[in-house]
Image (cartoon, rainbow, N blue to C red; front, side):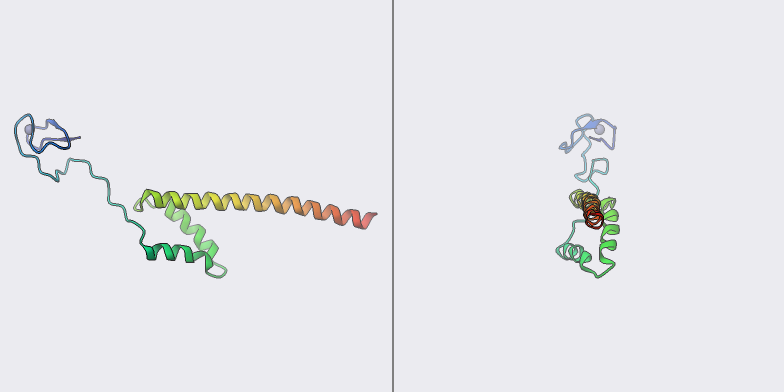
Length: 119
Ligand SMILES: [Zn+2]
């Protein structure tokens, strides 16, 4: 909702002049709502993001840190931030599953070893 710069009357967004006093309303009236400009991710930017995990040794850590940064970067498009959040959740699920599997297999292997040595 924008208002008249002359009399302050409430105007519809498509009004080109004030219905109360007749003042012409500028097309880009500063009072009208404008979504903040968000930076789209370029093709090169996407390639860079997909290459980060392939950096030897430190790539995975850098990727995780960058996912946190991207997920909270309000200057980026919402869809990109959601992608970063989804990546973080997927990684978290993977880590939890990995720990569960390691514990289950670790217990199974140690029991096998115990039964082998004791009987
Ligand atoms: Zn007016």
